[in-house]
Amino acid sequence: MKEKQAVPAFAALAQETRLGIVRRLVREGPDGLPAGKLADAAGVSPSNLSFHLKELEGARLIASRREARSIIYSADYEGLRDLIGFLMKDCCGGRPEICAPVLADPCCVPVKPKKRIHA
Amino acid sequence: MKEKQAVPAFAALAQETRLGIVRRLVREGPDGLPAGKLADAAGVSPSNLSFHLKELEGARLIASRREARSIIYSADYEGLRDLIGFLMKDCCGGRPEICAPVLADPCCVPVKPKKRIHA
DNA sequence: TCAATAATTCAAGGATTATTGAAATATGAA
DNA sequence: TTCATATTTCAATAATCCTTGAATTATTGA
Image 1 (cartoon, rainbow over the protein chains, first blue to last red):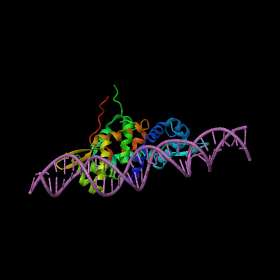
Image 2: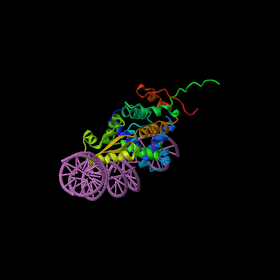
Image 3: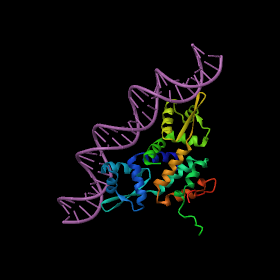
Image 4: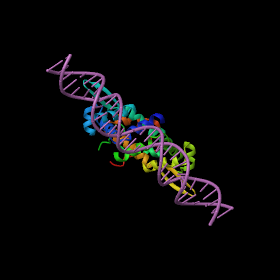
């Protein structure tokens, strides 16, 4: 990810409603949620929600698909990954002391759990 | 880091000049750079730079200290770490498939092998 | 003290973003 | 086709952010 692409991605997250939507959708998983449910959850009007969803989609942080009458939004995991990667690689590049403590955090340990030494 | 703190941090990075400053300062290391040098590097007026530096400092992404006539700015590694941690932990929480590929990237592998502090 | 350097603050204006409500579009059901 | 639902689009306003240049503060050296 380049700086030119990172700026709008950060801008998309720099707003309470939008950041809330992204976090909600990440937790929701690939199935996502219809716009209506998101509007209720966020407590904003449908038209306002639509505005924010467009921002997030433009920044490639969420994706949408139509399903019957609803439009279903879901997290764009690739875009999120790219942004995190930008922050860690491009932004903290050459200064591993920034990244290291984050990587050391058990909450961020990758999928494969470490083998437990049996008692 | 909480959402309330993350929003202004993302906002601070959501601007070309400021993102450039942060990246420059990260590469520069703890010694940092005086405001004047940063203004030259960024190609903006001193007063405009000052405005952006204040935004970044308010978001705890950079720090400042006076040294003779200059004010030296440097990256706030702790703040940057917190923001990355927020994105990975709070934002991608429960969905390790987002974090895993980033963590697997050799560029982000920590210097020392990790050690779990909490059992 | 006076002048020079380094940077910040302030006020004004321009530019961009966010919110609102009304109107439009798309889909599915009667 | 006609109606109801789900969502978006549009235009207007409000709010926030960025830039500019002049004035101000802080520090150092003659």
